[in-house]
Image (cartoon, rainbow, N blue to C red; front, side):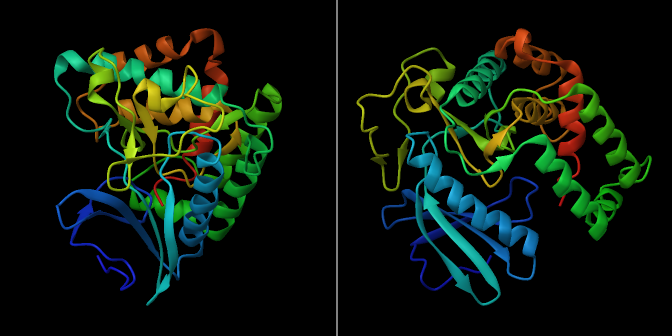
Length: 300
């Protein structure tokens, strides 16, 4: 991984997670403490550049509202790359191996984090991730040939992308508008950091960033109930966060729990996640719709 010369670190550890098409590295200081995360994409991939720039704007907006997300440190362009550095947050990514006795509590905490995010104040959110907006973006990706190429590379079989998208658009019309909330946009296991103490039922530590310094305190006092810094969770990889249908996040996490990439979890964990989130707020048809729409954006 190429490191921009303006990014100063004593050690760089490249990370191999996710399907976003971006390169990610953890940066360490002279005492071998992680202090930042570097994310870069090729400048000749306009879709990836747009998402990286969007992530920077979203992080600034979300951090300004006291949500447990990384803080933007710097960004720029260099030698055919666009890059972004963010504060490093303590915590263990949910996709990492967990003792068997901890996994049910991991799933419960993932559900609690999703519910807290979906209940967070979203007034003035400028990022439109609603189903109509996502369907339009999916149409653009289909027209460009990107979806068919990525599906083919992934070995996906079945009807062509245009036909699948037409069926999903019809289902969206039949279901009508659903509720909107603040959503992550890629709510999968690698994108949620968990405090091991919170998983094991003890008081969570405040998630700390950049060199171990706590993130800025909320201007109105201590974190409220449901704030991830108090409850032991934090969010990363927020290039698709915005105002959208919460079922999109639920569908992403269900897919992640069922994925062969995460063999420690399985169908019973996916069911537990939805139970813990609250079945009264889960519409199976809307969950199916959002899972279908999400598939037009992965893999890249």
